[in-house]
Length: 345
Image (cartoon, rainbow, N blue to C red; front, side, top):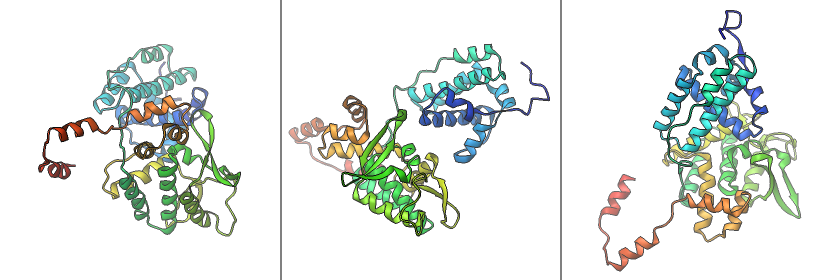
């Protein structure tokens, strides 16, 4: 196919076409991120996030896609991702995003079948198995991060909003897209217990208890999110964006917005890079270290079965108690190495 001057300015709505291939909002968001990364790395476009990314996905330039979607370019890009340290799971998902985009363009009549076939035949390069290990924060680091979330605020409303976000992530082990999709109507009382309906992965929902500190944070946030009202409308977003000056918007905070809060708070706290999912991992690790049974941790994480939780916890760093006991048996004495280690870390 050759693009003529008449259709060279055409656009493709990936935002509209993708739900027919994958219904999971989590997967859709991941595909948008990978396509955006591909266009940055291969086509030289500027990276986007939030509303800008949504706008890009709804109006992808057919000319740019026509010029930069090929088996050779996809193969080279996957090699770049492997060089950056992405794991097998991430690279497989990146490949799937580009293959899906190519197939949808063929269905829309913008690409030839043979291009999609060649792109689909690209095999991902070898990479580390599974997911990257991520971070596992200690309890003191979690407290420090929560404090930093309030300290980075430039207005009282932002401080209250950030406090709600971090308190819910650090106690209820929510995923960032679960928090972003939460509505005030998801908060309710049953059997005299305050609970929250969580819209999880795979269209699954769960009812979980709301800790008292979260209730207090939500109550303070409610007073600025819906001033003069008993509670905001049931359909309105639980956590919202803020305008300049701290005025509360009617639009909900996006998953990328939640990511930005955690990223800025972790940098302010001197913790290095911390992702929102690291907080879910840290909650599970802290509970395990405190002696909480795996079935209770599994219920909090809302895994389908305990076996998933066991695999989840197995990725966390384990204490090398045997090595510590052996060093004691040998009578090895402490020296200044610990001080050197502390300085390096």
